[in-house]
Amino acid sequence: MGKLALVLFFIFCFFDHAAAELRDIGVDEIRQSQIKVRQPVPSISGLLPAHEKNKLPAALADNPLIVVHASRFFDETAAAAYGIDSLVAEFKAKKRPVVYLLDDQSARGYDDWYPGDKSPDYELFSAGGEHNLPLASDETTVVGGFFGSYDGSRGCQTLAVRDAIRMHFEASERPFTVHMPLRAIFFYDLDSEMREELLALDPETVSKAGILKIFYHFAENFFLTDTFPVSTEDAVGFGHPFTEQEADPAYRMGEPVDTARYAFELFFEGIKVSEFGSGPRKVSLRLYR
Image: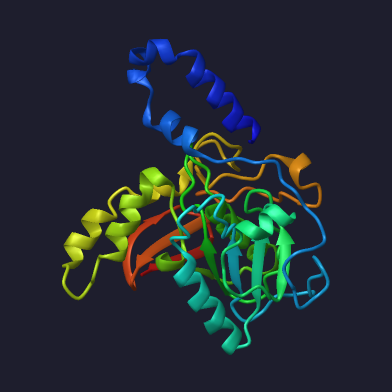
């Protein structure tokens, strides 16, 4: 059991006799208590990467597929399994790189890893979704989970999106697109209703106004945080940065991804549902079912 989970366990046990006093706990605190944490376990065995462990090319081209923490430890029901399996097969058929990010590369971690394909092109250790992948193309696809990153819940899939954006713009100033197929992404338990609502949302039967209503404040609820360092005083961060360097000493944090340096457009099934940020670096976030 991770440190956070252990602390929460003792806190709730200690106050069990005064449960009524917990009524005033905010949503953020509740969401934070849902997060599963375990001690990262890197190793050199397990899945069957087509290349030597952690050995990446100088550049990853052709819209790589990044699969983040597709483990029953986090996604107990393997809700994203079918979507991930179909995408892995699709990307391999098109000879596009497939990258697995695992938080636990021990036998236990591999037993929890549920995608049927156990031969990614690259298999990398990632404690929280962090990475320094050398992205050379102008787009990538990021799946797995958890989706969303806000002050109460810090999702690893969104951290992987954040780092994909950062890594692209370290090498290029061209606009960047991140594809996020929701069928291959899992959400926190308390956000799972939103996932189901989005998967059921058919643009053919729902008006654009109805879609925009669902996405009202979506970015603020799932992507933006204000508790981490940003480049200017009035900027807001996209997702959360990885701040536990001791858990992944090989990771390089880089500069902030925020609304002062970047301008974001959010799409659902090709319909622009929101935009935020005023920076010169253009990012398109494309959600689809």
